[in-house]
Image (tube, rainbow, N blue to C red; front, side, top):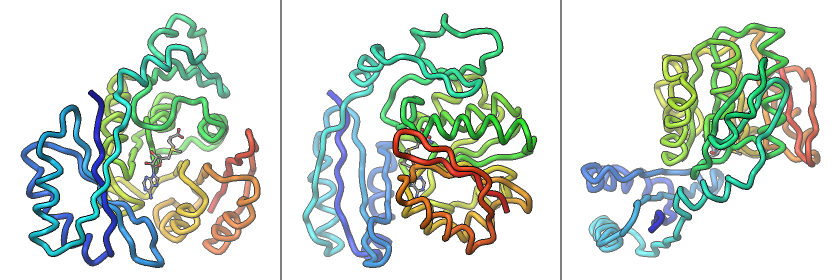
Amino acid sequence: MGQTRFFFTAAKADAERLFPAFEAEFEEDGLPLARVELDETAGIDEISLYVDGDPGDTETRIKKILRALDAPQDLSRENLPDVDWVARSLEGLKPVRAGRFFVHGGHDRHRRRIGDISIEIEAGLAFGTGHHGTTAGCLETIEKVVRREHPRSALDLGAGSAVLAIAIAKMAHIPVLATDIDPVATKVAAENVRLNGVPALVRTATAPGFHHPVFSLAGPFDLIVANILARPLMQLAPQMARHVTPGGSLILSGILERQRDAVLAAYSAQHFRHVRTLPREGWVTLHLKR
Ligand SMILES: C[S@@+](CC[C@H](N)C(=O)[O-])C[C@H]1O[C@@H](n2cnc3c(N)ncnc32)[C@H](O)[C@@H]1O
């Protein structure tokens, strides 16, 4: 049996009230919870609870909290594929080369060549096996930036599988913070970090955008990589500016070609200058400096 996600939307003020009640109820069971801003303008959040295996009476318990706190009862659920199923489907996928990086599953370990910086990623529930144009674009740009600029610290925001954070740690041997809004992704990221032998360098945390004290503790960063989507990237521009060191670099991806100019405008308003655009499969990866 795979994983079930229970989720519902709520006005921001309600979500703020409900989330701690869910944390208190499900803390002992160790069930991952996530709160995501679905629509910033309308002030709508989504709260999700993930259950591995048989969900038992989880639905009844969630509804009880909603009733007790006088919240709407429209709870949704979806079944997520279990990790083993996804891992099996990866066995057919070929390893990926991007610059010096070689991203592969365990079954292709023997294909590593001398000089490769190899990253082993088993498919999990988190995005990032290197096959997507945005991930490959980031890997190629990371190689160039690390080689030329020798950053001393880095942030991978929206780390997914942590493929980019692991790439930076393995190439530059510097501390990297890897964060994701999704606690399931963070769990997979931490496993991949261990698998690749870089737990002393890569720290993982669950955080929406820059909402977590860890950013001030670990930052500012000489290099920030964020492969999320154009809209959240534009919203995050002022905070990116605050968390990158003067002269530091930003690598942004998850941007469609037609969205490039809007993203560049949002970042030039924060005094970032465009260094390079790398197009791949309809997506672009941007390198910016401040
Ligand atoms: C396209 S995947 C990129 C994964 C990996 N970095 C890569 O390049 O292959 C985007 C990731 O960003 C996360 N994400 C989306 N919005 C976010 C936000 N506002 N804050 C933090 N993470 C976010 C998603 O959960 C997802 O894991």
